Image 1 (cartoon, one colour):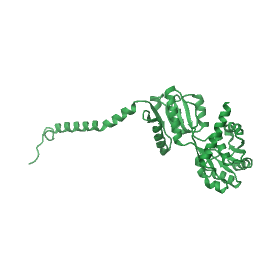
Image 2 (image 1 turned 120 degrees about the vertical axis):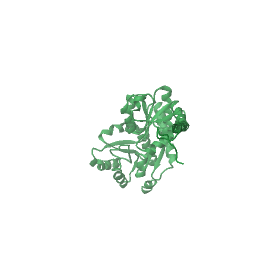
Image 3 (image 1 turned 90 degrees about the vertical axis):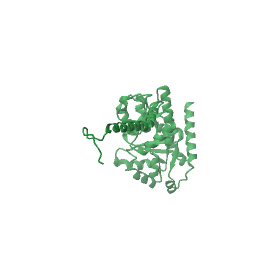
Image 4 (image 1 turned 45 degrees about the vertical axis):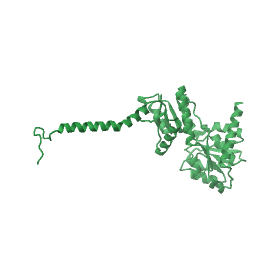
Length: 328
């Protein structure tokens, strides 16, 4: 038997009822499935919050997010920062990863409180001074004093340190030059006026210093120049300390560095102080650091390397002793 149709509407009898039942079922299913998400959203909307503006490195962003979630605890909600966010909320702190992320947030709104991670002192100090309390940072690149003492721990008889700088960055080294005599080291900055002057200036620096103290100056130390710098130093039986952990893998002898776990711990303390006092502490380095050594380079130059932890302990003690003496 053929099915019968309602000729007025051209559909099977009971079609309206079927559609109503189906719509009710779909609506019920929507509420059932969306309930967990609504619960999560409600939970994330409550309690204190911070925004996280990531870098261009997705793996680094995931790692820092995981560490910050661990150190901040479950009572603080971390949300991704989006363009235009500060127009809706310019009071919630933003944690930025790297100089580019900081600049992006800062340009959008100069009133938003920012805690900058993975930046060096020369980058963040000016912002922090102009926006005292509302802008701060956890410093990443190793301080030159710590690097210099590390070099002396590896070369106990070293008394002179050579540094290379561009004309526009010489002033960054002057405070370090003034501090090094406290640790039994004399320092001199050799100015590299142009790319063509790099190697001739480096040779003069190698003739002066027992080792080269490399600072995080990308105008001098970069993937294009580092091979030439290292080869020139080794041919004259000189070592390079720094400028970072990555360059030790390229051929520098040693560099101290701060683990990301310690950066996250100090960042959590800064966020807690901001929530309590409405201000960030000044930019600072975490107290805990590690050291990267290139054993192959040490063997090629016949340099016996102390134990890593022994170097760390000695450097920490000497830095602490100097700070105590300056406070007296």
